[in-house]
Length: 417
Image (cartoon, rainbow, N blue to C red):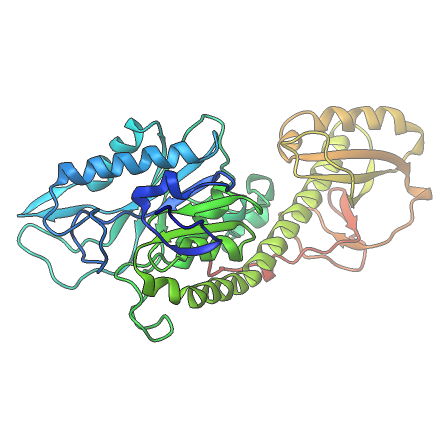
């Protein structure tokens, strides 16, 4: 009898028949799964993969065959995530992630990244020669050298610090790049709708991170060993097309609960997204202010009297990909007759350090002090950052006037690591 056609979500089906099952469907762009850890757990189904007493060699042959099938049905630029942990047999530690990585590479996949997942919880007992094991490995493979990997959605604001206030040009407006150590607690059994749903379900944050890195809206995602369906549920909630195969029919009946839980998780991330937007805006505005201060100082040192510099945000697309923002700057001069040489000095300054390191696409217009209208908030020269004031400072280096008003104090720790 032919396998039933797959539908979106969690399907009752056997991963061993993946090539036959996956028909008339878009090839998956990403595969996320966690295979049985040999025969460490009894999942209560009929799968020979990880059956009780199975030899390691037989298990690895089955895994190699599965990875070959995943490569056969997926797109040429597909990625594959494997989550696995080390196991012990008769006091011997078996580095299962390494053995699975070898199987995947023999099947045509290339190992691209290895992430250590700190689960923060473990079984409370150990044996002689063991420590409590709270980590697993999250392995990323691809079929081609050109594969999707975009970490911007996982960047997070940097905790409030005097350093990024004073040196905003050194910090990305997108936030801190995630590391290859992920501290994500495993779900507490019983907290998922009050039932024991699976021996080792994926935390939603873990699934969200993997999908964010290697997929976009509209992509097709597959978990051939899906358990309760955490992967297809999160994929669907994030606007992807998610499929999962699982032999335990009871999990398929509860899939709607898994899907609703994924949607609730994404709703909680909305506040974090707004926090990242606020951080980005603040860093850019601080860069523009400091850029204006240093610009006035450099032109003054070149021999041209500068009254102040007006800084403005521009909606222009930056000229180069490494630039983070465009800015409009009025160079307000004491002597209007030196506009051309002062402009030449300013253009020379922005092509050299430190201004060339700010990532600002600057449009500079020199203007005489007599013709310049004073509007916006004043920012005194000196140590950066200076809070804005409404009155023009009376002394010191050239000051800055700007209509925007960044608030670094509004940026603090965020719960998303």
